[in-house]
Amino acid sequence: MKIEHIGIAVKSLETSDRLFERLLGKSSYKQEKVAREGVTTSFYEVGDSKVELLEASNADSPIARFLGKKGEGIHHIAFGVENIVEEIARLKNEGFEFISEEPKDGADNKLVVFLHPKSTNGVLVELCQEKA
Ligand code: ZN
Image 1 (spheres, helix red, strand yellow):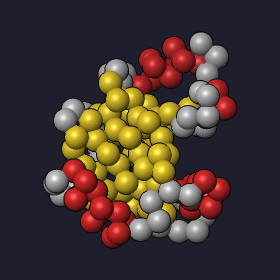
Image 2 (tube, protein in one colour):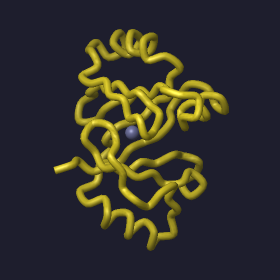
Image 3 (tube, protein in one colour):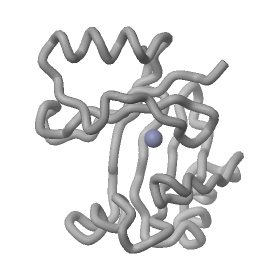
């Protein structure tokens, strides 16, 4: 496992893309809408890891709810795993709770699943596996 990316909730990708371009000294390598999750994402490479900016694409989006409750900021930490199904089984066995135990298509060609933050010290944890 490694930290694959850190997800940051932002109000406006347009504004925050300009900010992160200046901060990191490079452009976003990918913008992608994930309709099912109600988000538009923008990715930056930072060494072996990435930053994923997340903008809500509708009012019911989990990102819209997060922004309403907490404002802009770190939304989740994503750990890259080799085999997401085995890792879900291992963590369930360890007593961790998942938001959904079924891996889904996420942004950036990944299968993803989220652990419930109540079982991880309030941190929303994503597991992601590169799709073949
Ligand atoms: Zn993510």
